[in-house]
Length: 404
Image (cartoon, rainbow, N blue to C red; front, side):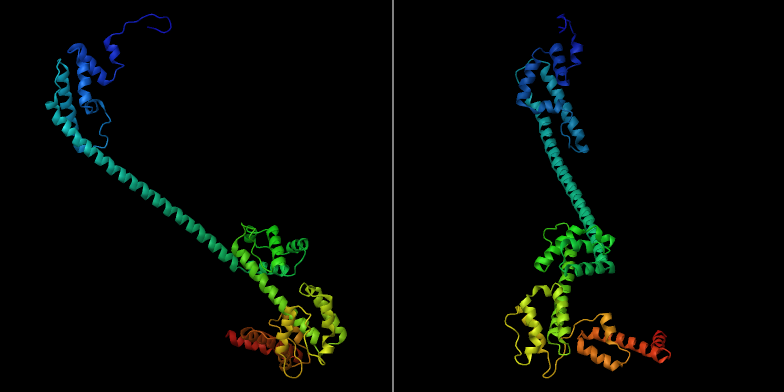
């Protein structure tokens, strides 16, 4: 019947077959040509042997069966179909159990083989997936390792570069001055930053570190998560070392200015005023400076360090007093020396022995550093002596001998 106008149209059996499955066409042919009760008999048969439709009509049955077993599958299908067809063409109440048994038994064995192959393929697939995953993990690990190695190499090259070391030392020199933040950033702009370092840190982050160092005397930069830890550690080390050196220099200078017997009162006052203006000096009170100015005069009558001084200042004086000889006074010796300070030691009238004696009175450097320093000082003195005497430079002759 057409849905549009309600007319009925007669359709032949051959047309109906075109829309049927193979199973339905098979049953319809037997039902119409041989046995009207074929469908009922087929229902009884499949109820007792539910694997029969799978054997006859399922094209995807036993998908994992190896090729060498396909002839057995065809034998089972053909034998089962012949047996079922013979059973359905005639009306009968007894199922063809005896005829079907060998085919069904063989099919059961084929099902077992199919399951074994399916399990084996699944294991192989899982193994392949695991291998691919392991390979992907190895490739990812290798990529990460290569990236880490490249980053480590770049880091090592940066940290070993002169520009990096020079920059951090310059920044540390600003930090130990404890400048106000705007002034610190202004002075920071005058320091040339290595290009590679510009990708790792900026002025804001350095300002945070400077503020932390002024407050705590060290740099951890825990708030700055994206700053490389080695950069923080290097800057912290430079700053702490420089701060410790500045503090020792200041302690040496204030000790020498306070108890230096060769200084006049005006020289002493002028020197202590200079020392008071730096950051280390601003930590002391006015009363403390007043006692520093009067200490030399009162020292001969009462050589005692005032109890009102801060403990660190008392300790600094005690250490330096312990190094004084039994008679006389010697300055607190510096543990480093600059080229400008070395040039101040040399006077046109002094000979080298006098210069060396003056050097040893003022400085006490590590042995290796002292040997190089005295060698440079002697060379400088010899060159000047040659120039004053108007003779050929002995140092140049020595240089040529070494080169040869």
